[in-house]
Length: 527
Image (tube, rainbow, N blue to C red; front, side, top):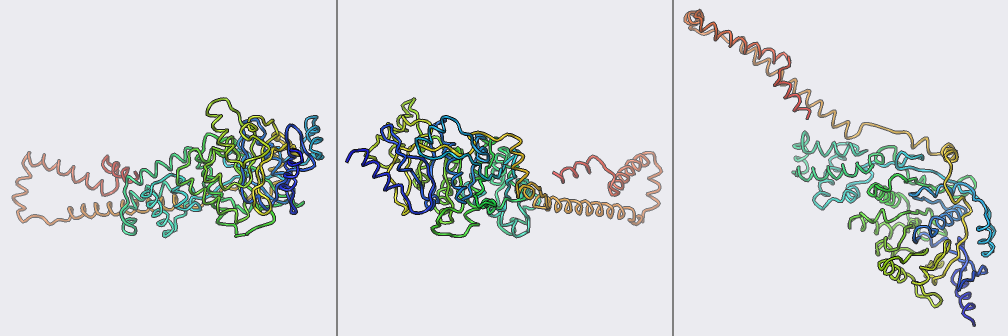
């Protein structure tokens, strides 16, 4: 049996499945494409997560399009992070050209332009349905991890959340948590310490600075109401196609903490909200995180542990998570080991470090009798990749060089008019675009402080008035004649005028007429 015959037999046995699957393309060996044995991936294994990697311009985005549009056609919804702004085209049909025609002729696959149902979402002011969550929904543990608090600071944050729960102080946005932190060191210090023990002002100050840092990265637009219900990600259109939810995050590439905050909260919310499903015939939802290094580059060890835990457990909910990045080394080894499907595009060897990274990448893939993997990684053309997947029983398939099919949707962005049409047709936009500003911790505590200050002012004024009245009603001295004699002298009259001025000043203060001292006291109360 020739090498090619052995290769075809291997591919046919490894990539032919009885259940539903998606088709990536056809195998390629020694420059020849073998369309008779297409490369397929079973749907039931796509909750085992995946990786799409490769250098810039090698076709990662197009591969992502191929996968999500086929998932949609099979009724599987997806959530996609669109950081570069070039994924919205999945909502419009593609256009054939000579290059696509030649590619599909080699693959022996018809090219049928088709659009997929799309929902546009936004984390910021970009066009799309607003995504929000409340601070309370994060909880003290997750919120502490996002702020990168140490154990002592995290315990204080847990006390703050407990205090707010016990006293019905909703933590909606970052203004609420800042107000509570300030309150804990000022007006509410005694009450809080009497219930939960002493809290260091220095620790509160550190937490406040970290909240401000998060706020400066744009997180204030994310925290608020109405909160996004993750069940709205699991929808189909009237034709049974899975809706592709595209989060437009083109304006937060320089705000990695906001991006990682959103992703971690989303994964945690999905894990907490969705029921256990076991092994499904196809995923309930697939999540694609483009430019995944933005999550991991500044993540603390605690945050990485949280992500690793969620990735391990969330597949039992029927959820698949796919990381899209330039190099597999961008993904921590603990997470990379959990990824069942690996689609690797070309890597470039411009430096000694690049060559080491390529060698390390090659070692992450199965050994092959047909390819020199480290060499192949530098020779892959655009629209080509190496694939290592799982079969229907969860057993890894052999590594294969894959000649990819073209996306059926547009390989480019949507025009403004097309975006407006999608937004106008959205079933959920009107609901989530409504901003609610109900009374939360900020408003409630501000009201309490104003009431306390008003009561203190009234008590002070009452006390001053009582003292003035007491001075006026004091009985005359028995030495009245002597007093009158003394008061008739010029010196006595001068002293009397000075005493009179002091009495008048006291009366004015009791009546609430402002003096410089009263004004400073009032200012200090409000501060």
